[in-house]
Image (cartoon, rainbow, N blue to C red):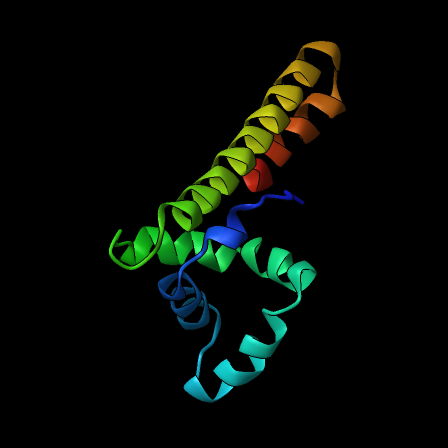
Length: 114
């Protein structure tokens, strides 16, 4: 989990965006607002993959601050690096394995890793 100080720079519009992105119904917002007071809960909320999709699908700089935007984009880049490293490790394993293990690695790459 990333411990960033960007939360102290969030604006009201950032919290509105988070509430909108993380709740399905307006009736859920008051409960989430209470949870957002706790910094540890807020960290967990910011790690929610839904936020990445919401920013990419309906992004507007007028809607969120640069602090929230770059925090979410940083999360995407970290996940992409982890996926890339995982695929590199699998491809390296292909060079070191033989027989049935090669077939299993190819199957895993095709079915799950990509």
